[in-house]
Image (cartoon, rainbow, N blue to C red; front, side):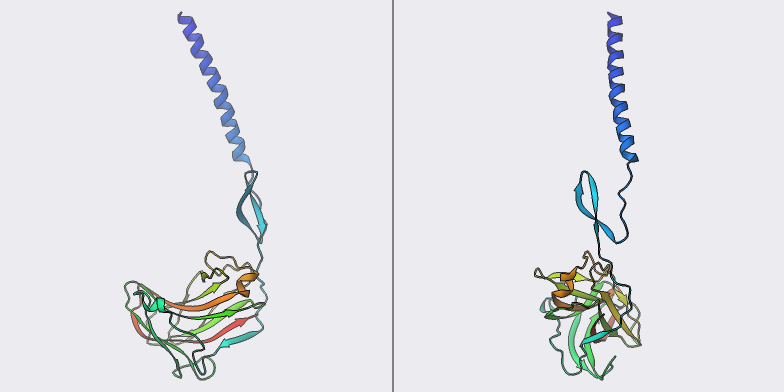
Length: 240
């Protein structure tokens, strides 16, 4: 009787060892499988075929120098449709109070757009102005906007371009905000070419630059500085 029990236990252990060993071997082989190679200029799509990610070609923006600029807005006479949107006026964290054409300072010509702001400090706030207009930027490669703050403004303000594009009016902001330098005109620019990395959660394609619905400029204070006064914007350009 006891021998029968011993034989039974031994058989069970033997079968268990066989299955466990096979599973371990399979797992080891899976780990040895090479990663999918992706050549430069390609990115991994979420689609999977046969359990593997399929590489898909991603356009690469040109590295040729910019040789041509077209000024869209120079703010010499009027606002040309630029405004503080109603939704921003109703939010506590958006602090642009007024905009006007000013001859205080200019990057080109004699005037610029003056945005009166009131950054309280100690929390994130921003001043935003925008233009709603259908624009086709084909075949341009870059959008650029010049921003100025006076020498008396504390360090810490940053600028960012935002585009609203396509039939679904997709709100697309620059990946990073650019520091503004007191007493200097700073050019904020971003590539609009297919494959650009300059936009958050968006890879531009040909339709991106061909169907722009809004251009916005956002001046940001991330807890500091506290500042009440003007920010100047001039020379909204597209370049190629």
